[in-house]
Image (cartoon, rainbow, N blue to C red):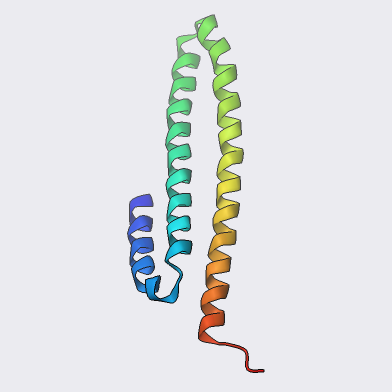
Amino acid sequence: MANNTNKKLKHHRNQDSDDGNSEVWATIDKSFKQVQSVLDRNRMLIQQVNENHQSKIQDNMVKNVALIQELNANISKVVSLYSDLSSNFSTAFQQQHSNEHPKEG
């Protein structure tokens, strides 16, 4: 799904490069890549937590505490990245709208 999103972003970025929005689209693209990286890390952490839990080895169970703490921190990071992404997208949309419909004074 992220790959499809990246293709759409590249398409929009290419269309909007003449409008001065290429920097905004690059920022949005970067944000999606950061989110995907954190989500990939979370997938690996969840797999490790499951393996540790299934092993029933006490040392592995203790390791799960730190892994779950990292997962929680990563979830907060994803929320923050999506918030920034939303803000960047909103700004880009508002700028585009302002450029297409300038106020007459």
